[in-house]
View 1 (cartoon, rainbow, N blue to C red):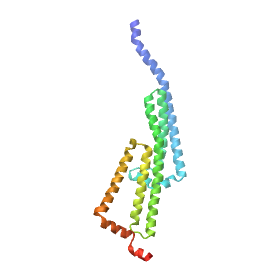
View 2 (view 1 turned 180 degrees about the horizontal axis):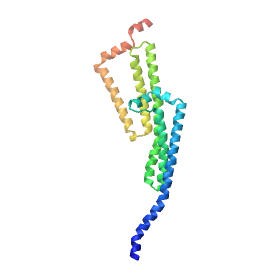
View 3 (view 1 turned 45 degrees about the vertical axis):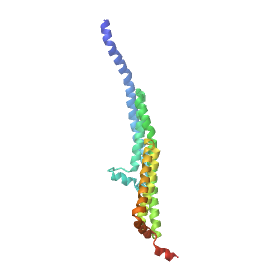
View 4 (view 1 turned 180 degrees about the vertical axis):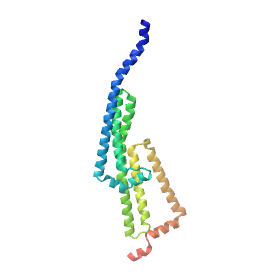
Length: 227
């Protein structure tokens, strides 16, 4: 009889653990189902609110929607923000569910991801408004150059737009704090290299080209007429 009890004791212990785990598993599944419903409602609310505020018009004029469509996406930036809001609620539900199951390591990992999502949202907002401002600045420079009869107005406007856009991207990446500043330093090194290469090219082998461009932008005949 004692031998039978020795054999059945691990089975009893295993069944007890299953009996204690099943209620927690049922609660975790319930939390995930409720979180999924809340996430869908929250996503719908975010998308409708952004569209009511004409946020999709801003992203379209900023060129964000066109960039997403060129990448093969059928959704615009407003839907992207809705998807992020959906994922935020799902992550919170997973953290609560796994915490109830006692999986602390998984909970800690998801907690780090959850803390990253708000920074991602802010970086996307910086990118959206910055892209809109970059296009506005480029159009303003091109319009001023055309009114001042400066040649290559479109080229100067494009340079202005992409210059501001590069600065905006640097701000967004810096807010994400990815790579401990490695991306920012690499970007600055590349930018400095491009500027140095252009300066060297104009200084050594493109002096005549630079003189031609300045003559097109600021013709002498116009200066004489102004005098």
